[in-house]
Every structure is written in structure tokens, then in C-alpha cells.
Length: 381
Image 1 (tube, rainbow, N blue to C red):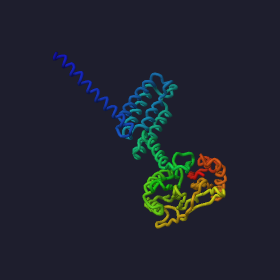
Image 2: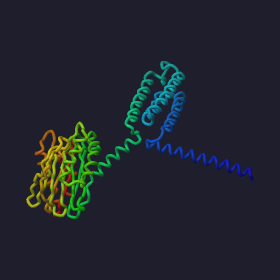
Image 3: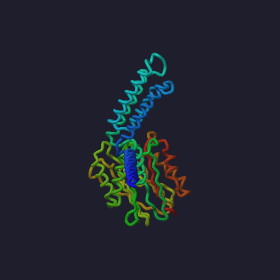
Image 4: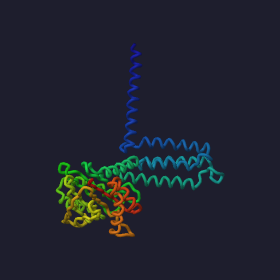
């Protein structure tokens, strides 16, 4: 009976040890793929592949070339930290020497360790070490890099979404980055304020384009989103200008247009900071009118003043805000671009401008190598 109890205790102890080891291994694996843990699991796995490749090369050098040692080296450049990578390189170098001694001089026939093989493996190791050092300096492991960029892109997309509007209003937003990239220097922040009666929307074009301007656009969109609705409308652009000046960027300027729309009366104010004018379609005449406030670029000098222009959207009227990439190009000035935009927009009058924003970008500036954005608001008849 005592013996049976001792066996049970022994088995229980081993089960507990196995459970702790399994939990620790799983936790280490999770931490590793999150970029927070040690890379010993990956290092151990790659170290085991080197003797396996070496044995396969010695057994069948025609099918398993000595240059196959470059495979764990390339994988190590993606998975390991620089210190661990040096240990992997030392093991691979030893394996390459063993293969050369076992297979004999490369002049004796094919499938030998040639100088070219050594150069290929060394080159892979060199570039892998550079990549690992860059990741270590940035502090973002490759396993999290893609996820982080995807998260940043989604944050910009969410921040650029427009709030729901009451019945009788239609809104659309379309944004197309330069060169088909995922990041843009154009962004929108919008919110309903004063108990939901007022729509405030800010369309901004950061200097630069694509990836170069994407990081600055993300920073500014967060700051502008915090300012919007927290300040009176006339104080928003001065506060945004001061914020941009404090960043002290080499390319520190931006253009912006701020719309303040009363959703009950249709009255609005537009404040502009060096931005292309808004365009209003008057349903009773079928004519387009340019509406633009007065003000300099954001981030140029302190104490800038921004004067508003007022207007009103009657039933059937349309208001478009856009960035210069939509109407300006190397082979045409902004006036020609605006004429083309309004001409294309007239095609959507009969359909109530449903789905018009994206199609207008396609029709007017499909192949322009610049960020393009269009915000469209219409008051239904």
C-alpha cells in the first residue's frame, strides 16, 4: 500500500513537472512571436537544421548542395537577434569546413564546396546580420512589423471615417494614396458637436506623399481629432498651426480646410489654411461656386489668422472638399483641374451623388502620382 502510494507520488511529481515545462515552453513561444521573449527556441531549431543539412550534403551532394547552408542563415537573419546570429554563423562555418574536408577538393568533381559556395553563404550571412542589427536598433521585431503597419493603416482609416448624418443628408469620403501605397499624407477628421446638431470636418494635406507623409499624417490626425470639438470653430486652425510649429519638422507645413455645418439649417462656415477651395453646387441654378476662406499654410509662422467664408446648403445642393492632388498636376493648373472635376461631377446630379466620390477620383486623377482625397456632402431634395 505504501509502495503504491510512492509510485503515485512519483507519477504525480512527473506530471506536474511535465505540465510546468509545457506551460513554460508555450509561454516562451507566445512571448517570442509577440517579440517580447527570448529567441532561444528559434536558435535551437536552426542549430539542429545545420547538422541535418550537413549530413544530407555528405550523403548525397548532387541533390543537397553545400550552398543549402544559406537557408538557415537567411532564416536566422529574420528570426534571431544579432548575438544569437553570430553563434549560428559560427556553427554554419564549422559545418561548411566539415563538408569541404569530407567531400574533398572542388577540383575533383561536381557537388564540392567551391569558393562560390563560400561567397554565397557569406553574403547571406552578411545581409542577415545587417537586417538583424537594423531590427535591434529600431526595436520592432519582424514578427510584429507587419502587424504594426497594418494597425497604423487601420487607425488612419478609422480616424478618417465620417459620422452618421441625420436623414436628408448624404456623405462620402474617398482617399487614394500616391503610387498605390497604403499610407497617405491626406486625412480627414470629423465629429458631430453641439449635441449632434453640427458637423465639423477637417480635410488636411500634409507636405510630402505616400509613406514619407504617412507617419506625420498619423500624428497630426490624432492631434487634430483631439482638438476638433474641444475648441470653438474659429480657434481650431490657430491651435493646429501652433501644434505644427512646435513639431519643428523639416517639411513642417500642411494645408487644411475646416467645415462647420449646421445640420438643421444647412448654414456653414469654411476656414481654410492655404487649401484649395471647396465647391458648392447650387441645385436651383445648376452652377458650381468656389468657397474658400482666407489663411496661410499651417506650420509656416506663428500668429496666423484664418478668416471664414459663410454659405448655406439648400435641398439638392452639394459641397465638395478635396486636396490638390485631385485637381493639380504637372501638365495642368488648378483651374483646369477644377473645371474637369465639376464637369465629371455633373454626371452624378441625377443619381444623387451615390458612390460618386471614388469614381470622381478615378475619372479626374487616376494616374496622378500624388495623394488624393475627396469629401462629398449633399442635402437631399
